[in-house]
Amino acid sequence: MARHESGRNKRGSAAGWRPRTRMVHGGTTRSAYGETSEAMFLTSGYVYEAPEQAEARFKGEDHGYIYSRFGNPTVAMFEQRMCALEGAEAAWATATGMAAVNAALFCQLKSGDRVVAARALFGSNRYILDEILPRFGVKVTMVDGTDLIDWRRALKQRTQVVFLETPSNPGLEIVDLGAVAKLAHAAGAMVVVDNVFATPVLQRPLEMGADVVVYSATKHIDGHGRVLGGVVLGPKEFCDTKVMPFIRHTGPSLSPFNAWVLLKGLETLDLRVRAASETAAALADFLAEQHSVARVLYPGRKDHPQHALAMRQMEMGGTLISIDVGSKEAAFEMLRRLRLVVISNNLGDAKSMVTHPATTTHQRLAPEERAHLGITDGMVRLSVGLEDVEDLRKDLGRALAGLRAGARGRADSAAVVKSKAKTPARTGGRGALRGSGRRR
Image (cartoon, rainbow, N blue to C red; front, side):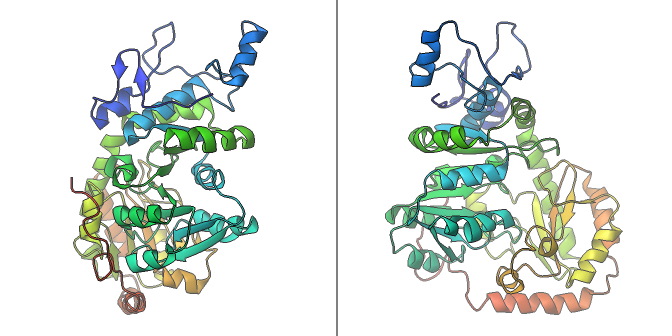
């Protein structure tokens, strides 16, 4: 079954609506009962009026539904709404965010192909690139995502896929999307962007030259810790000829119930992301004043190494903050002291969450690789939720007060910064492509 172009309903096209309206109405299709909320079609299969109709559907001549692994009306509404929001021609929903990443890569790669990827990635993304793709004869080259000279050097060879996150998890590094897209396309590569941290509210990579965008809808799109989900968005031809056969025959399909929950999440996505980002900006300033905090990383702060680029590509600084408190012992002590902020490896939730990347999401990486990425033993990642900012300040302030590693933390953090400075980011320096990105 062909996938959907930009979201439509019986009242007309979503193309003229602003993003917040698209999140509420995009892709809505009502049944004969005229329900207000989207209908939930909890069915595995569908019936045909005649054998000729079944034959026509399997041939692709009749665009009705065949099997919910291939397509489902509730899932289709979620896909259409994501298309309307992202500005994509087509989308395929998946059971999880990692299923979306896996599908976007594996559907277009074969033995002998080459991937160039930013080194700073979520732990499971790194596993696919480090461990799984090479087993199938795909060559993977890692680069410093902030260094355009490194990108240019790696992309002198023919390449099939460029993969990156921006901002990255957990170091919040920013990749120049426009510049990297130009280099990638010159090398014949499709650019796949994991846009989870920025969300489609704050950043739309397709407008800056990316070809494919993937999301873990589990995060901000649901935003309430209820269900798993993912989505791949991109050109119609790519989705129909590459993604569709892969998902149809390997089966990482999104369930209709989860699609319905995600539709409800999209209705408030804009409001939640902007509110949490405002709180995150205030908390980043507060954390920078704490004696126990050696370093604060937040794209919205002027002291972020790539603040200017971040603000060209993103509308706000986002909902994630990373801090360094100097040591694993200090980080664990801080986490134990928290009463309001919960310890979880998830993010993008209405509840504020904190995690220690070195021992959780990125524990698989060798210590020297974590150090190269700036993931110190003292790094703590904070996902800001929707609580009152004053309550969060009080909880974080109490947890940080008098940490034993505070003084040593500043020295450890300085050493990491000095180490990373040996290969400085060159986004705006000699050899960089200028004029990329956009202002909002």
